Image (cartoon, rainbow, N blue to C red; front, side):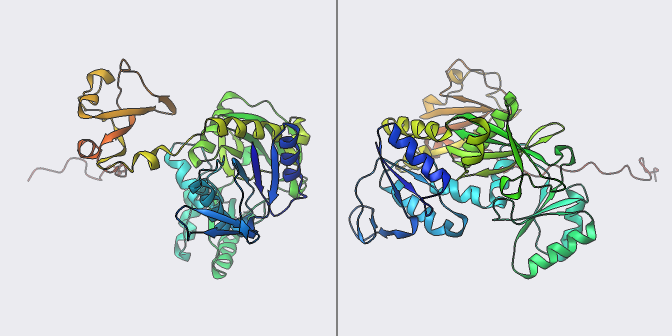
Length: 397
C-alpha cells in the first residue's frame, strides 16, 4: 500500500508513530505538508499537484488537519476523495467534528447522551439559556477550541453573562453547557478505529483545574470501558462520518455523556497510558479498507435518474406495524431496505422475515416517486402540558 500522511508537523509524535507503523508493515509512506498542495480542476479528471508538480498515485491518505487550516485542509481531502483515494476520515466528517455546534446538532439527532447544551447570540437570551441547561456553574466553550483552549468554567450567572458578552463582542461564537459535577474533573478518551474501540484512557485534571486535557497538566491511566461507553464512542464516531476518532466522554450519573469527537486525535497520551500500538491498529485498518473500501452509499446511489435514498418512518398507526418486511409490499414497489434502525440498534440488510415495529426507521433505496408518498411529515415539537386552569370546569351559563 502506498500511503500519504497529510501533516504540517512531520516531527510530531503522532505523525512519526503512524509513519513508523506503516514502514514496519512493509508499506510505502510519505509525510506531505497539507499546505503545499494545489487543487487542479482544469483537466478532465480531478487531480492534485504537490510542490508545483503532479502528484503521484496513492492508495490511501491519513489526514491530520489542524484547526487553523480546516477549510483548505478539508478541500484537499475532498479532492483525494474525488480521485478515489481512500481516507478513513472524509472531508465532511472532519468539518462536522471541527465545529462543536454542528457536532452537537448531529449527535443529538441520533439520541447520543451529551451534557445539556444551548447556543444563543442575543444578550437577552443568555440568562434563559443558562437556566435551560441547569443553571450555574456552567461551562462556556468556543466553537473551534482545541486541547482545552477556549473552555471556561463560570461559577455564577453574572460571571457567565460577562464572559459571554465579552466573547460575543469579539465575534466569537460560544456554547453554554451544563457543568457535570459528578465527573469530578475526569473524562474518558476512547480511540475508535473502524467499528471498535482499540484503546481507552481516563484523564484526570491537575489540582483545581477542571479541564482534564494532557496539555493542561492532566494525568492519564488505562481503563477498561464498560460496553455502554464503547458503544457510545463507536456510534458517535460513525455518526460523524469518522473511522478514526478520539471520543471524549464524561462519566455521568446515568452513563456516558459525549463531549467531543476529535478527527485528528493525538496518539502520545493514549499509547503511553495503555502501552498499545494504536498507530499500528490504524494502519492495519486502512490497509484492509484499501483492499475492500467503503463508499458513500447516498452519493453513489442518488445519481441514478428517478432513484434515490430516503428514510421511511413506521408510524404507530401505520399498516406496516406487525407485518414482516416481506409482507410490507416494498419490494413490489421497487424499494429495497438497506438498513433498519430500531432505537439505538441498527440491523443492516434486514431479512424479509423481520417484523416491523412502531418507531422503526427504514433506510431505503428505490423509486423516488414511490417513496415520496411514504416519507413521514416533519416532526413537530411536543406540546408542553399546561397548568390546570383556576376553574377546571367552567360554570354552565
